[in-house]
Image (tube, rainbow, N blue to C red; front, side):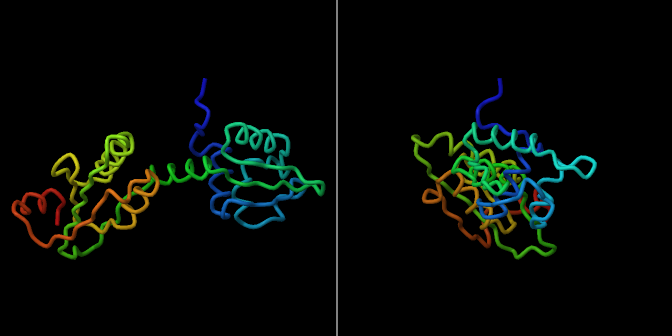
Length: 192
């Protein structure tokens, strides 16, 4: 049995959540003529169109499934439209998927600044601390200690995004360092 809030990435329900998030979380679309909607909706519902026919029942079934998992709310309106709204859980799910897709941009020229990320997250938020540490490793930050990671690449927006998802921003510091003992090893490691 699948856990309640798991959505298979790039499946039809995930596409609904993704495009709904891009539309600021609330949307009204016509189930009678969905292609008449915005380009965003056209892209989000294209997997429900077969031989130029919109599969309304399948679309509504997926909406009901997402509603049962508390990821979105939907309501069929009298005029044939459907109003969609992301729930708090749905917004978090979309953010987590974006987190999984995140990478650091590596500029063509290094600005000669190291970004040292240090954190002291309390034991009451151990899961968030472990998730942050894991994500920093996935982004190829170099671990200096268990709660200190370094990278030569700009990462401020990514750190803010990760910290906001795990609600731990107040425990994280980003320090800019121009030189430190042993940096030659890290320059070689990062290829800068």
